Image 1 (tube, rainbow, N blue to C red):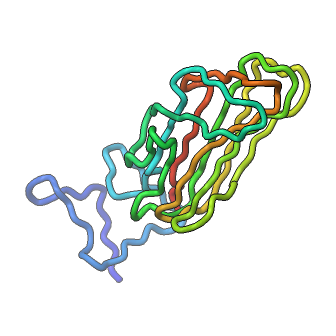
Image 2: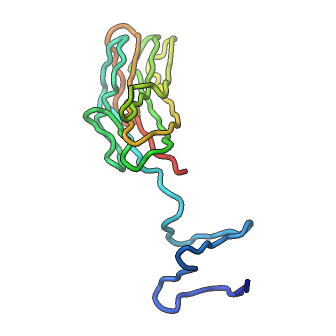
Image 3: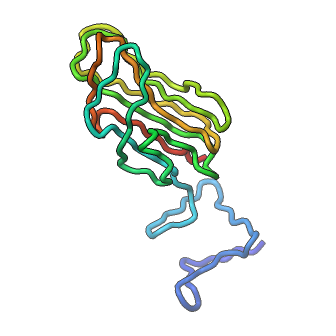
Length: 190
């Protein structure tokens, strides 16, 4: 193998420079550093699809009734995979993999009670099942937020929803708005 010593390589004509040919392996040795001061393409990946859905205004939930969170608005949804009518994210074609999921709800002046949200999955052709629960119980919790996150492997067609529950007396109100009651996630780069 021959070694070529130069400080700079420029294309002979135009502005494109190719190193190697199709099928070749270009090796960067251990201890070497690549510095990028320009635009890069084709490296790494993107955390897509990703979505962030929220409840647009305050909403009420009856006591001891598990209720689907009415996620009727979005900040973003790169694959148009979140349905704001059914409040469901469905894994799009070609996007199976590990997903980071997160959610939050915020109570509007509750007394002490058990309150939780649950992220549920309906696998394509399967039965509904819980994959994560974040809970708060007891005390004079007033305006507390309950939040949490998880990582799970999802298949194409898996449908996700977020449900909430409380056992305070009667119907109780939760705060809406993108900073209070939301559900989101993104596919992890592997």
